[in-house]
Length: 124
Image 1 (cartoon, rainbow, N blue to C red):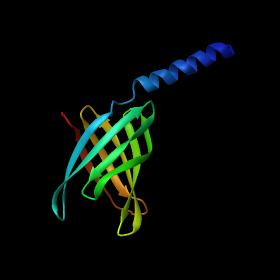
Image 2: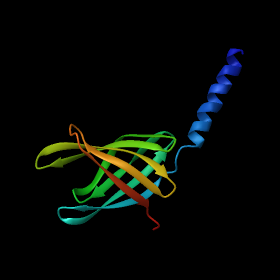
Image 3: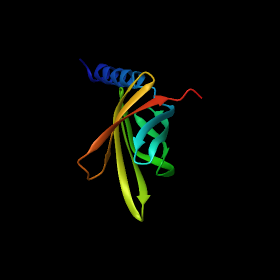
Image 4: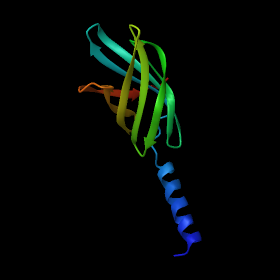
């Protein structure tokens, strides 16, 4: 196989991976029980190839920008940094998109425990 043909195969393979990336762009909501009752978190996500951007808004304050957002097929991951009582806290999200459902493991950086949340695509 010559180099030109090899490059075309690689380019087509990359295009196929991008074409099959999960469609996560839009608004997603998850409701979780907490010490203060049911809490709703809203995820406003925007996919651009394998890059994921957007905001997370919930009980811990206004919208926080997503950082380190990645999409690979139906797998996503991102982080959100919040300030709580003068200290910065980094929350890590890692999950999988399946249709109108987004299952994620949520972990505070440096902590051993995580919890699973399920967000649903918002219809409005």
